Image (cartoon, rainbow, N blue to C red):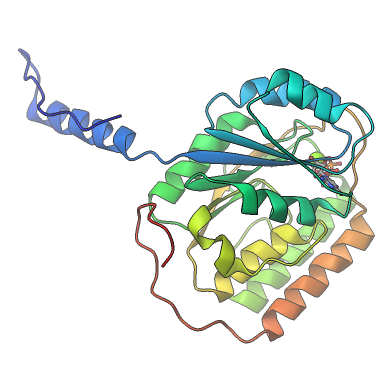
Length: 268
Ligand SMILES: Nc1nc2c(ncn2[C@@H]2O[C@H](COP(=O)(O)OP(=O)(O)OP(=O)(O)O)[C@@H](O)[C@H]2O)c(=O)[nH]1
Ligand SMILES: [Mg+2]
């Protein structure tokens, strides 16, 4: 993609339309490359739905936890160009961290393999990164978001944990425990991620705040898991989220670094 050298003024074309044309061309030219990082644990059937819908991303990174349902065979068949990392099933967090380290694009989008996150929403996440945010987190509870999937227990737990995060970190989030998240690859190392389990999403968001990064929410509609079983245990993983939040609050903030400006240069 390149900037147009000139724009032809055709009959009836107003100057406003020319500006719009130029603006659209400039935005197309600066659209970043995107890596999708997908943790998988026995998600073969769901990947049949997800992988063909990821045509808009530049790189697909699958981190598989030794699935025994043919997940890796489906990946090799449907997307032979995908980067496939295999590791023991330590947890979603360990898988996401491995995927982040392997990614090479400007922007990383983490997306579950179970078909609950619609790849059509990726552009909305990336657009906010282009506006200057470092981390863009999906929200099922802001206007325009929703969920077909949350049980009452999970909904109540997430609401309580989100409110606590807002108090502890001085933010006004509407949804804490949701894994549809985009981030600039250049900020990955500043996040200091260590979580192995489902608390990774919380760790990513609260560490972004303590590192002085710019975090935004974007509406997202969570669909039902298409098939297979959830690996999340609301009580056990909720407690891990809580511990992660408390620990993050006690950790002294890192030295203040200059903020990133919009653009996709490497972190210095
Ligand atoms: N590699 C790897 N992936 C995992 C592991 N645990 C979970 N995942 C993946 O992480 C993603 C999220 O897990 P889910 O079980 O869907 O969790 P959830 O979305 O909170 O639960 P549901 O709403 O019931 O689907 C899925 O793509 C899983 O396959 C693991 O130990 N290793
Ligand atoms: Mg899921």
